[in-house]
Image (cartoon, rainbow, N blue to C red; front, side, top):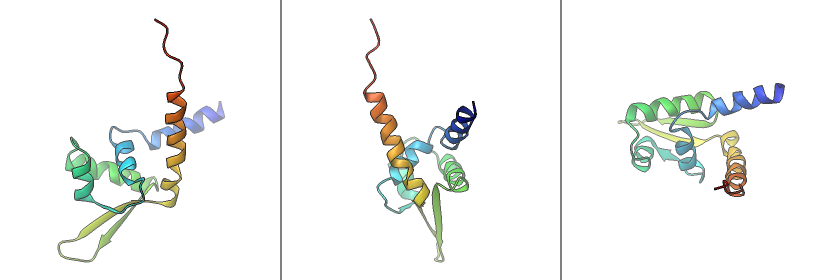
Length: 104
């Protein structure tokens, strides 16, 4: 029971329509500007992107850097902990690919 509760807490960190999409855009290790992420994720509003990035930052998965320029430039990248999530998500995708087809 305890493991199930722990897993539920972990999955809540990734909950949200756009969080996994954002994480996949950052998995390549690149630093991305807000406008880059907005362009790479069709259909996401600025408000939703900002909200999801704030939540990922609060969870410690994403690092935000504000550069002291005018206008301010803001970059996002995965934290080391966030980067370590990549193999776990790859494992989930591999697990799903090996699923037996549903019976007719």
